[in-house]
Length: 345
Image (cartoon, rainbow, N blue to C red):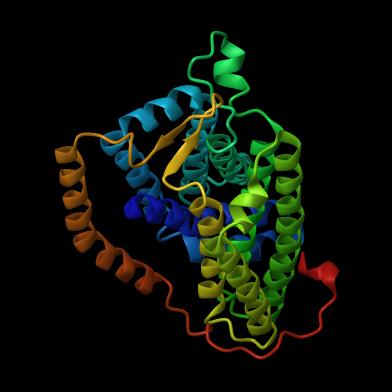
């Protein structure tokens, strides 16, 4: 269960930041696109494929260790799952071809468009899937197509969670990329983007609460009826304040950690209250990680495989990130110059 939660978190932090890179590119002025793409490629180019490892691990854990949960989600949410996976494929393909196509022609424009659109679609449907899992709209016993496969995910709350996920990904990417720039102009541009996506995340977060209230989802109770949830929310708020203080003081070497910590606290607050239930069903029942798991021997073998795999994979992944993220410019920087906002988009 710890591996499952950590895999979801790491995919949101690392894969989400990759998706956010495309989201930021979508909202970049044409005059700044070349510089923005150069910075994005330098940041995500060497390791973008590795981030999907966490999604694969999540799927493997559910498929092997929790077949009932896997079956319910993969059947009732197969439409958003398929769209999300197609988005991942389209995004990866476009990213590879726009940098390695042997012929520079009009297809580059198509690759760029596919990349930015799929960068928005994928986290949107990732959030929709997450929102659907806890909204009590999944009905395995539904007798019609719409009830089983459409209204299980197409509702206000899941869409609000999807939009919130998109803004979080954009915010993570902007914060991560502040330290990837090598000049004050680009650094200030990404600070402006971080501020914009931060505001958008707050607005979409408020929309999630409104949608939860409309649909009768006890989101406020999940967050504030337990000391763990309250502590996590307070920690997320304090880390956000500290993050912006560090940004404006030019201390870009710690802001990634603070952004990651903030998102971790948000995820903890949202999942702790109804743990170990991972899928809340329309009939009032729930699929639990403690009750709906595979055979004990299967869980034991899966745990051993994950532990052994971690011993080999995590050090190699850490070294990969370390090797490609070395940037002599990414230390403490002076406070960015006062540059007109229009030139920073």
